Length: 550
Image (cartoon, rainbow, N blue to C red; front, side, top):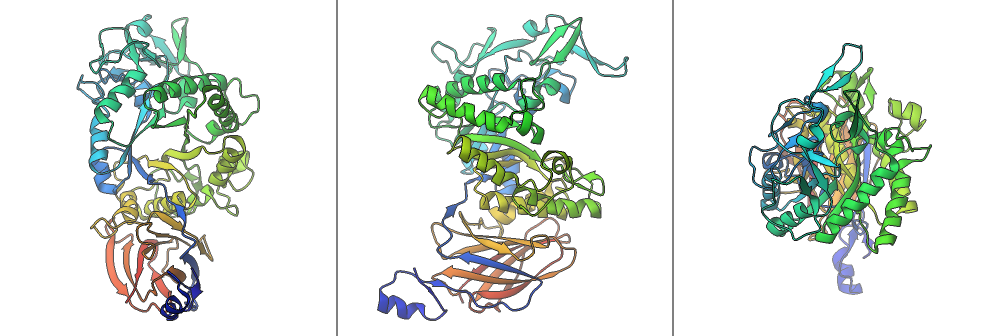
């Protein structure tokens, strides 16, 4: 590979015997912000196929072009795969019911999602309960009720023997031959049998397994399966460092014994205080939990002769605020929208400090979350992948939510995150879904962002950011996604090196506030000279730019 001026490649190929050339860019001229992109030989870092995930079903995948569907959330902690009974926990009166599926066929709550993913060529992430009890029935009759008579919440037990009568014992291993028609009349549910059932019936699909959901909150969300009864009151029991490591080790081993090739994700922490102290676990002792967990999983690999947990799995709902309001919600006022559009910078930017309790009390400055986590992985359990199986910055029905979502999707690929799945917070997520389509189907004909990330910089990341890619199948094909956070149009000066192609035109597609939450085709850019051009980004917009030859 040799960098040459446009027009010189053919001569060099003939004289020097080169197989390809890299075209250096010219000068795009004066602009509000400058993007410098190396879409040539430097585009070697793969983008994981699993970062464009969503928590949802086939309909959600169709709206987004998602590459991964996750079956997760609070409902999965006490999920009984044999009958699809589950418990709502604190989300709704701690009741058992048929919310996940009215069917009593095994795994019917997850197989439709898996089938939709498989049909679309996407992967599935299935949650495995690791608590001691799962729901035994779909009877919504309450066995506890909330009492506020003392001025604080107390959970009064109405059925003293509920643990034995309304729940079944959850076991990691069966210790006996598996069956594809599990015994729903006994008192046990076996998770290795669940994994075997999925492997046998859905083994041709790409399947990953997650070790439960937000264990750092079990004491508050699921005291019915992680609590104690005393004096007629149910009290949640906080999970400890040691307990969670033991449960992760035991259940991950059970999964790997049945399906060694399936990736397993662990911790599945709810948020930042979970990363730090497992939500103030009784045995925290000032130890950073993520560091402790990585050390223990490394030790578990040594003890078992194989890796048990493949992905450090965290949840991230932005705590950033604008105008005193948290961005991860439905407030789309100007102050909140502006803060939301900047908030993804906390994932990587060492110069950015959001307004939140995290930066005030925990980091005393920039979070730079992904680089920090990657450093911990490198130091404590190298080779572990990083994932965020729930994330959201709010405003899914607003252009600011689209901007934050697109920015995050670009960051996830650029920062080498292994998997991620967006969790919808509102009934209307149309702008967030449009942002997904910018990466997964920008032209309505299945064209996508590439699978190799290219180095790209912005002269003013507070105003605008750019993400660039090429395709491993066609390194000469580049796709740029430019995000304008400003409330006014901004001119971007784009200087882009490329391989084998002297780009002279570019296709353009945009998402704007007035675009109806859609990716809209725009006229081609014709004034592309020597891989350098200026492009006027609409106010608060996402632009997909596809350079090409004449």
